[in-house]
Image 1 (cartoon, rainbow, N blue to C red):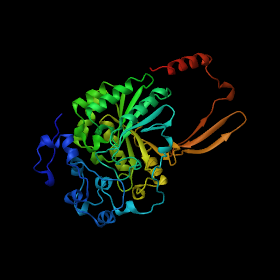
Image 2: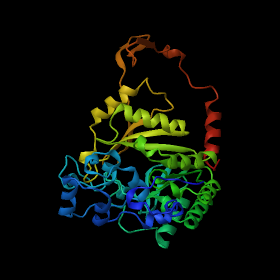
Image 3: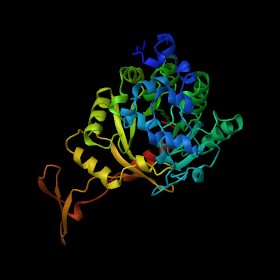
Image 4: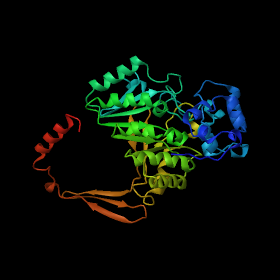
Length: 402
């Protein structure tokens, strides 16, 4: 696959072979104040952040992703720019500030492992990201120079996966697992595939968004050999769906690797029905399932990027019935403190009536149509006659990998 790009002033002398090389992108990323000031005309809010110089999430932006942002002072509210450039709001005391909002450290039975749900666990293979998003929920781990797991951490994590037979899925996360080398990724996938009860591997990555040139034929070959593998990517705005991103996505789905998208609702970036609709429709056209629309977690320094739950639910309601189920992401909130995900859906129930012999509920649809749903008579409700047989078969299937 060949990438083409429009030269921007700061990289006008860069050859296409360099620009399309993902290691060149990492080596030439913006990593400090001087780098950022050489590419962006900073606003007062952005300057204040650097003047205060508080210890916060590190910043790094690939040249590719930088080229998508508006860099003049007039573009300081640009959504791409707001995703990656820090402002003084990050150092303000917010309504809710949590260093580890999902209590991941409390649900870590082994190094680099987060096991909150019984049948699946996260493996934090690296803390390194090619781009650090300002709303990051894992500031307690990400960007701390932990890099790839040490040999002892790696071995302990694999031992935990082997000994915990109820785990059917392992989700590779971090940091961004696709920032590690092909060799390490191949070893990791092979080691996980050697564990009989692990059926599904997921890879959570923002690489197709911020550095699509990382998606090479060799990478796809490695991932394809470990199927079934699902890619969970993270597009937040339609402007991120460039021709380069489209080509990267195509390489995954053309090779039988399903792609799901998890966006985060972010204030001033995508918290408008038209933006969510445009993103979801384009993703679906590219054969990516819009999966989750997350409420932004209350991580430290994220208040200015968070939306209210009421606003998020109103946004979802405005799309209900106007966006096909295939394109509609599930609005979801991760309960702070480690309570897990809860789905948020519009309430269309108008009334309910429970009589001695019948029960019914009345609903009003998205377009105002009223309808009553009457439950069947209680005496007609029964389990299948051969339920025991079904349960025996189900238990047998779940005692070994499919």
